[in-house]
Image 1 (cartoon, one colour):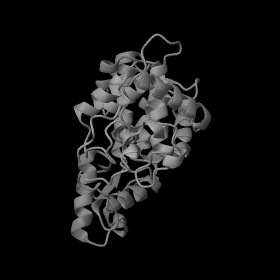
Image 2: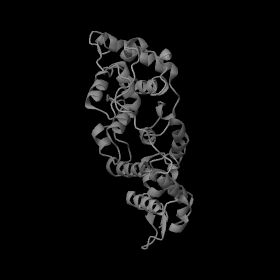
Image 3: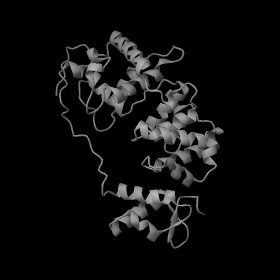
Image 4: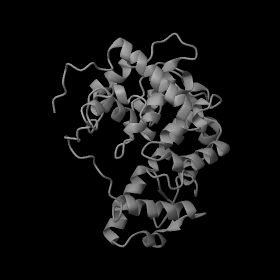
Length: 312
């Protein structure tokens, strides 16, 4: 679709200032009270939250995050335990390789940074399993650095607000990142405004400018929104990709991991067969879990399997 070029856009300087005022004011009144957002939240807690929140709703993350930080309040505490304990504590958050990556990141923080989460973007990016988004989020939210933090919610808000599109492109583009950077509040405030702006736009996308049922009537920037001004045109790009679950390898892998987490010792491969109906699929999932390091053989014959480092 072609977006008219004669309409004023939020990229005008005074409109950007207005956006900052309105969104930050809205956030001050509507923000959820999440522990990793509080002023006393340690950088380690912020890093753990960002890893856990990848593809996982806040409601599922909250209890696991609290238990995790109670057990491992510092990177050194986690690094001192076998990686399998991180996998066990991960529970049913899904994508358990994130637990292994977080354990590896904790070990790297101890080895390279004296147990303190680094503040520099490049040093964060160098940690195992920490990508562009997570590094920017930790640098911004934990250390007040001026970096654009662009998650799915931010991408959707900016696609509608600035570009007049219902949904962003399937994958993050450099243009989106540049736009988010241009919209950051300027340096000079104390505390800096850019971290609060980042999280405020995220919250707006999570609570109001949602993917399926946006609540435009409650949106604080409705008057500035190009998508709303154009009559909320339907998405005309590729349909959003759904995530199948029933009968998939992901489901079988999850069942296998649930059995392994509940066991207090190595589990015979025969006992794991309750996790699948198709033998070929089951063996394929076992092999993939071994290759990912989420399970390890208790002996040379691989007749018994367990969480890594836990059942040796």
